Image (cartoon, rainbow, N blue to C red; front, side, top):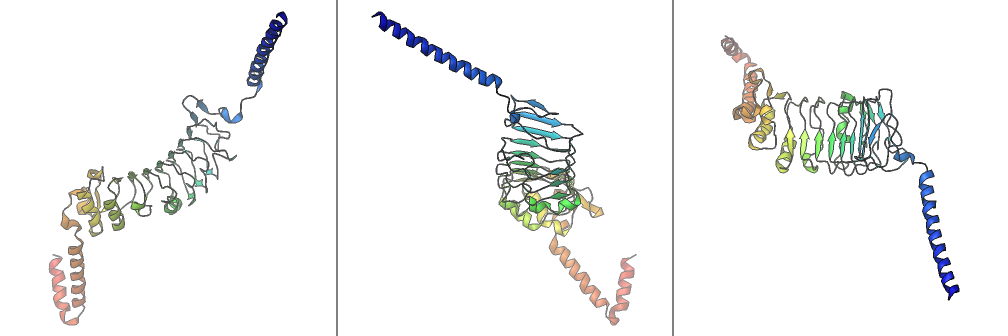
Length: 319
């Protein structure tokens, strides 16, 4: 009986001893294992791990995207770093995908975006590239961003890149894009394929160089009622070319800033809200008839028999 008790006690002691050994071994591993580099805050950055935020702004001496961005980052802010080029896999050079949801890159002097610059950011929802100096943008610049919802490109493009913009804003690449801001880029036309093949809810084209909106774009706007287009501070020419846009503006609520869309030309209509014009101000039929009459009159006046009468007509109308 005593031997059995002794054996039982000895087994219990060994069991407790083994548990303590395992505990201390685990503690030692945690204590002496170095912190992974991809979990530390990059130098010259401020990190708030509880919020998932890494802020690397105002580092004038930095010319590149910081390396070893923490894997826990959900919001990455880079501002004022003099980054001239966003190269391929600029944010995931080692091929490791990141969980970044919001990427803010304003005022970095970015001049070029290479193909697949954002590859590895498959969860990205918000991308802000406003107030840069883009001269070149690859047609595949935004490839690999299937979840992108909001893209801000305000005051970002120099003339060479403006011509490349339509290829970069591919509907196939940006199939889930809901908001696109392109204010202040001197755009003379909407740099998108047909609007009805996008899922846009908000398209901001304020403060560009739009003189008219093409009829095919107006047709697309009629078909997709969900989209809202912002168009104030553009130099619209209030003539016959604006007819389709004028009637869309009058009969649709898809332009929240309609009251601030003003005529730039002709001089007689400058400053007048487009929606306050009269139908005859943009009536293509009347304008075409007047033009046709003018051409017919000119042809008649070229005949020697009528030349004297025409001279008298022009003299009287000029008085």
